[in-house]
Image (cartoon, rainbow, N blue to C red; front, side):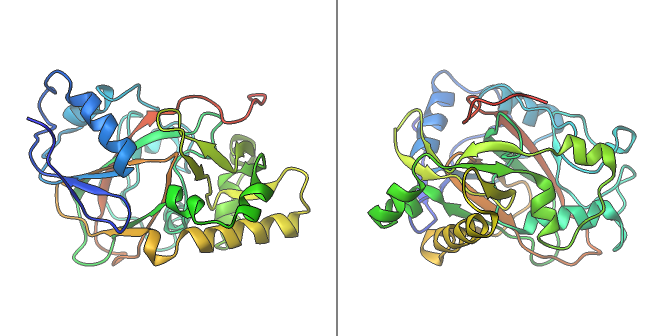
Length: 294
């Protein structure tokens, strides 16, 4: 049976209601999901009662998993989940809510900025798959912005201006922009900037998209102040309401998004309540820019 998809966003994002992803996919269904991602860029799958094992198994049917190592401030002995997951919860290893001043919590607040997952890696992410295991009583929505339509609507002069530009991405920049400065030497080295194209062309559809993120702070060959203002202007354009879908989480929702063509951000929620969100990530197609790997 073909996927049943209802568009839920203004120009993208669809909800799929006739499939159980906790079971092995029938022949051809993985390709249907890829095709739907090409069209919608964000897909919502309600009522997916995953375990860690079944979420990993489903993700692997879409592509190889990006292991989450060194992407945040959790030390290896503080990991709550296996490295198959990016742990974007507010919980420590004992499943207790972080204290208000915990530097891991303060670092994670940066996820409320518009960003694209793993844009700070040489090979940025393809798909993110976020599953809701525990949700707060209010707030905690995730907003998504369609970078394809935002690019389409730019004036031609701006498209010509940014064509070929290369930006530097690092988590240090995004966290500094909200006042977080507490990085030790190992973290500064690990979070060294990488380069990404400012405009990406999708390998399947050939459609162009802006590739923006709060992690981006510099542009090769452009004075820093000018570069930061250009990135700010483009982000303001790309996150206008006509390009944004806001997802209100329900328990056991799975949301998949294409990081090559969207940005997203988390919204605030009561800090004392658990929000257990587990993200698996499909590794990207390759670097957007040839560069040395540190």
